[in-house]
Length: 129
Image (tube, rainbow, N blue to C red):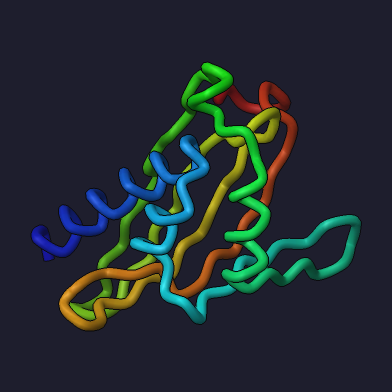
């Protein structure tokens, strides 16, 4: 399973770079097209499909362009089998610090994010970033 964990960590680096650069092509390289990003905002479920996510990201100014500090961190990778894994990561996007739980499947010879459940808070609030 070490090879799978290494492959997932490489995918996560692309994931971090994609968000920091607001690079839709890099995001498409790590997300399965049927993935959804879900969280709770003001007590209500927020459920975005990838078309909505890509449209939003394409309009943002990237952290790279602003010179934002990076707060990328892999907190956990758990490889359950040759085809199933989960990762917990932390990263900053703009003024928010995100904690993401990523469900991954190995399909068509590569790992892909199939679902993302996340939370966020203002950067600098609570524990150290």
